[in-house]
Image (cartoon, rainbow, N blue to C red; front, side, top):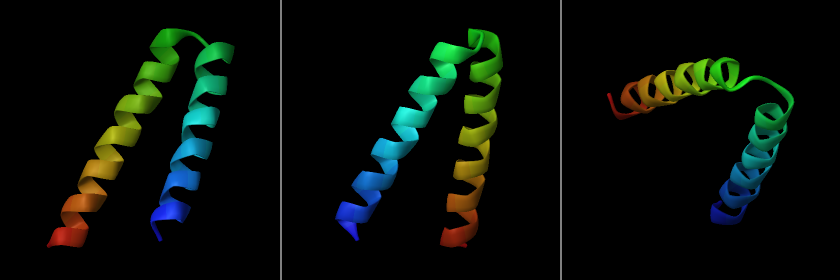
Length: 48
């Protein structure tokens, strides 16, 4: 499971790098903000 998580996180970082290099910072910051909110809320749901 740990290896899969590491691979997925590496892919996510690679995609984020592509997005950041291809689009304006404000736009990517909004996406990252939205993604953080979704991930934090999903973690809360899993715990509850």
